[in-house]
Image (cartoon, rainbow, N blue to C red):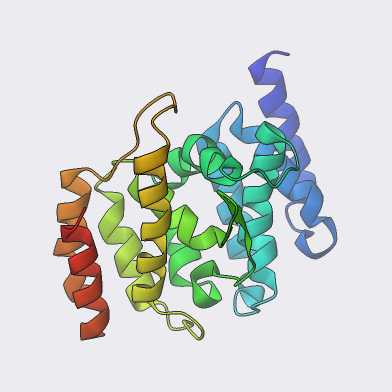
Length: 227
């Protein structure tokens, strides 16, 4: 089908559904996922819209699964099927979520700066048969996109988030290292090689002063230098 027709259909569908998140979230997520295949930037704008529109729900921990996990899993289901195969969600994020997300400053600020726990849900999935969490994996995939301008936006948003109740910025970045290591060491078969570039590493190190806890800063600095 012609991409213009798909985009028009998805745009019209989103316009009809976008203000009914609490009753139509599954359909809205499907709209975001299907739109990405033709226009990734538009899909991220849709995602950002429903988050901003439902700002009153951003402090509800139960909504993190709907706002973050279920959107990512929607992409996984489209491209990999509803399986629990080890690397599916990371591959999906690397190729279909992070490339667009990392360039959408508004979405970064909402997810990492306004959502309670920056969208972290504690819900475990499976990555290489290991219990894993999607939000730290998403952060890893953003870092692996080699887009240094996004790093200060991500770190500043996390540092300014006043709703970090159950996890710290240090915890999230340290958790993300697990997925970075997994991609760098085990994913040589992907179309392109993903790795933490020196430019991204330098940008992360330059942002450490934004992190208040000195132990968090030290642990993150050491983990970055070891890469």
